[in-house]
Image 1: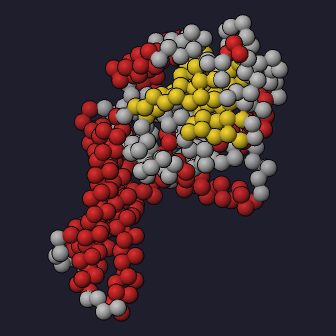
Image 2: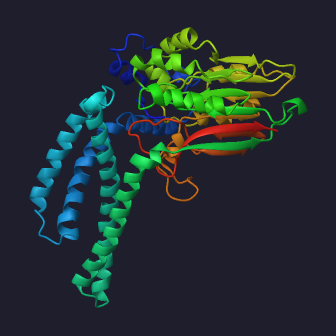
Image 3: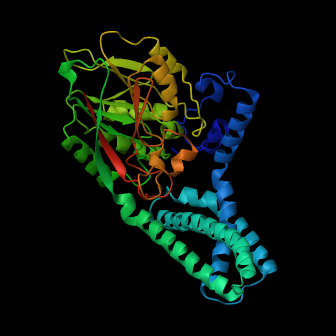
Length: 439
């Protein structure tokens, strides 16, 4: 899901990858931008700039929140005298600068392997935990200050109010730390096999019960390689689905993993075939290189790049798929020209299942009459509040964040993904292998 948003900065940042193909114009990838109002275009531009500089922004905030956490530990939890405003501001400025300087090197180290990778992942894990914990502490202070004033008016002493704050904030902080500790260990290792029955309009009786094993967002090269990838392939094959669908982000960023990853994916087997589309991270890695490698090492995987194919069998049944444009991974209201072309050529003799990467193209797909759309991209947010999981980080990017959606006679399923983008953390959002059962 994550990545560099602006295509120009992407090309500059990834210029060392010889096989990386970049789009010359992001507007054309989304079917043009002229249909948007000036206000919407301005908002879209601001979103794109924010997410395009997300790591820089978070690096800066991290320094501030590190000081807040240190202050809370010393003053609130330990009950000692704080360093004072001037010292705190100077320390925050130093940490902001240090984090912003370190981040580019840490991101490169994350893909280097060995100890550099372990150090980078440890730093990022601590950084994410610090960002969320620091934000919660800041909110707690903002809520406590007016409450303390109210309690003083009601005759409650300042010491009593502060003790109450210390107790409640300690519960929250240690709960957060425990949640993140689980997310980086057991939580991110969980893989859930889900079964999703889907009523497909016009499905012939002979196709009722057909099962599609749907996997997405493998991000090969970011922790899913070698024996772990082999184990995934074996697990998917063991499900004995009628066909297998991969909905993009097969690879992460690093082209060094493409050849071996494609070779291992070549072991995927299904009675009616294995089909795939490319995601935004495949674009960053080099989509032509990926397509070439899959064709050479995994000829059993049929890559759908603006294609519609009839699935082998006596009864007409079709799969269609398009490349992700790559640019602006947070874009809303996506309109893809390749998808428009496919929609204008829908066959009349059988149903079509559409494979796309980003679910924001679903409104276009339903307008064109695709009855079932399988997508990924969001990872289900990776971090979700306890409960149904629908309160998660992906909601910032799209309303189609995880699970099943039905609108205007069309159905969308958004897979939570089998890999991770960035740090290997999942909380209340297990990795997913979905079985879509048509009826």
